[in-house]
Image (cartoon, helix red, strand yellow):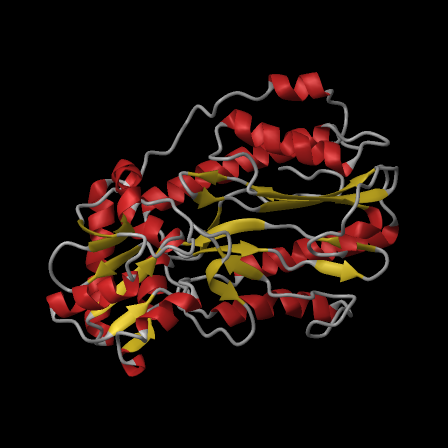
Length: 400
């Protein structure tokens, strides 16, 4: 094994954890205002009078409010003119004021009142007839609104929401870079902890604690640790596994920094790899590189997926989603949501533009034996792509 795998005690690893020194700055009030202006421009292009953004990642994007959705309607109603309207329960006003990042006209409702009726009244107040709904909003909100608005006047706001969020600003890229740098450091330490008999549960606990120690928002946002045959399941299987020589280790984890995600996977060998393990790992590495090399402004998401599959099919894997081979898309967008547009998948004719961010993870699954996933994220530049994290060089050397 290389010096990157094994050899660290837990005390050694913990000594290498301290709050992250180079922290990316927060999104400025000027950037929030620019996001709203961009949304309004897209509304005019779409012929939409109003957009309702529900609690969740899009409300955080436009207003800085980091709340998840519940049964109580909290939403931002955006019209072409005037301050954005913030619909919120009365009793939440103080909590809202503590996190709201934009000037907004708050319109509050009591528990016995119908917030959907309030939205309809606000639209009438602003002279708005057509309403586009945030694609992440609950269907129950649509149902409630149809009691007060004609169903034909309610539309899908995907083109507006994704049109704003898909291309990241330099400030967003910096927050994602910090999150990725932190997670890659945690990956290095986790690999160093590898030893005969260690359990997947022990590594999961360490990875969460390490993210917290570095200053991630809430520890690990997710963590998959799988050994041996369990690596053949893209999102793992239940139960604790214990490590033995000759097994592949797959760790997929991430964190958030001011809401922006990292998501990195490393697969490496504990001990000496078999010829088949090395062959499949090298093919995965080549497919990931082919997808990256295919990225440039003006090409489609589908073409990047095809580039990875061409490498695998030339080696006799697949075709399509057949196994042994790649059972899912090559990658997904990432930002305030860990999975968001654009998606690197067949049939997606979305054209890549500078600032778009995607994972690159054309996993190979060999059923009943093992799987290999190498996942790093990139962002599109004016001339190609830039990695957030350097890819793994070799099966026994997971870090550059």
